[in-house]
Image 1 (cartoon, one colour):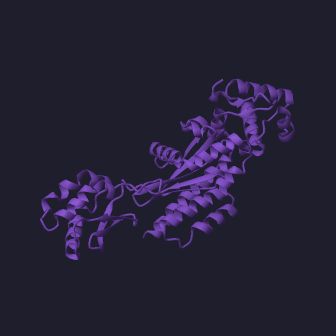
Image 2 (cartoon, helix red, strand yellow; image 1 turned 45 degrees about the vertical axis):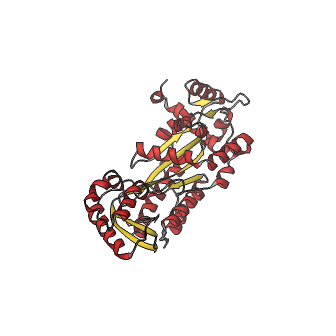
Image 3 (cartoon, helix red, strand yellow; image 1 turned 90 degrees about the vertical axis):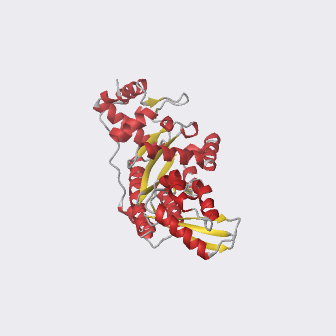
Length: 350
């Protein structure tokens, strides 16, 4: 029996088992399904159907219980074919909008509060990564003198966002030189992506390396990979909701509790998986269940991930939680909050 060959009865029983397991976190027995859902089948008939679903990999059977639990394959079929359409009630929408539709103009603050509200709505672990600058289009460069040997480089990109970096000079640098270098960089680099600039910086400026500005331009040349690099996602990602996820029954077990704490502490794994999923599914929602995550530490979790956009650049947001999650509500929350974040970032950076 392949996943596309489930009978209507089998689909119904699988759906009820998953619904019940989501509610209770306890293995589900045939008598429980018969009493709770009143589907006109005896416990014996339901037990036979559950046995068939187990034989074909949709349900598992813990040795210590007579009940059954969904497998990764069962959850996948449920998400693809059986769950209710994604839906948020008006109260949840109002909460999201009251928090995000505000006058928060600082990007960091907006991303941080987004991770908090996403976790609050889903009761899971939420992660929001900073937008990637590699495909950002440079609008202008500004050079601000901090001292005679330190400058602040301000990179404005077409989305309206800004990246800053401080450079140390081994020569004294006056305002006149700053103006010349700034004009040169804007003439040669404005309108290019960060990646294009990194790959061709020397070619674009080498014919203007006069003795007067050569040391400063050389500093830009030597630091191009740093200046026009992506912001370190580790420094610019926000994870919220550890307390929320620890309330889930799964984490009453000490071993499971330890695993989620390690996961939160090693956010590189989360960020790497999220970035990989959005690279493979640009503009699309990504739902990965259990071992679909291809990372042992995430084999007991599901991830729901979506990108958000501001101008020509994008970041990622999503949740991580036990496979026993309310997929419909979680998916709706991730999609809606990604849309709201894109809108608010656009407003904040106009």
